[in-house]
Length: 298
Image (cartoon, rainbow, N blue to C red; front, side, top):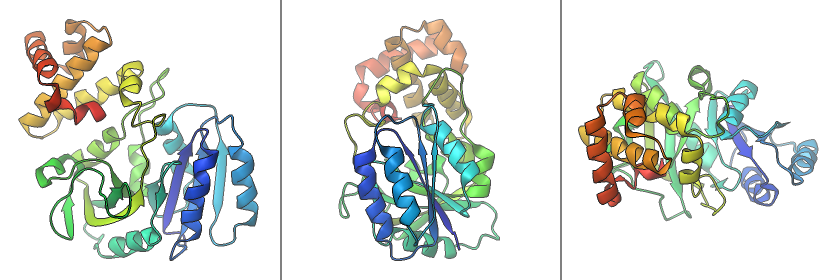
């Protein structure tokens, strides 16, 4: 039975894939498959994955190599390849705890999915098994949408596991000429459609933020893929969220837009706000940069 598709997009990560594979081999249950989409690697990733796939008997491994197109395109392809009921993105420089799949299955089983507004579950990411990435709520579990996370003190990356059939309806937009778009755009779209996630306060995913990884390069990626970022901000401002979040989004957008040599009029038109409003919050964002740092990581 394939309950979970563990999906890994990768680019020149042959060395760290070994650690991730070992964490899969050591799982306490094997109700999963592993899909690896190679986003144009020039190292020996293909030889490594195809080699272990031939000998692996505990779970199925699928491998596909494509021309470099970015993580979001790789995820869209992975969704088409997935046989699991749920879809779990695990990056190639990260790994999961020994009980990760077992925890996911247990929390999925705790939900009555006759209540159609649940889309999945999410544990915590950690720098290790004791040090949580970001912040989390008090208590054992919490049901809320991605747009309501900040109301409940949920900040930073989390280990979302999404029902595959629903995820396929919310694939990432693919903008010609751009190779990056924030994953938040999909989480927000799911939330705006009324879908809830059951968050649980257990670390099941260990991550490493490498200097050459997407998180560390986020500012560079946003500036070079600005149409995708514009779409994210435009949609965010249309959702029913707090004014504080919207103001910070405008601050960050104006700040980044000016770094990207965009004119105020163009930026304002892009996200449907007035030029004066955008200028005001851009100046505030530059002056109070510490208040928009959370958005400068998105």
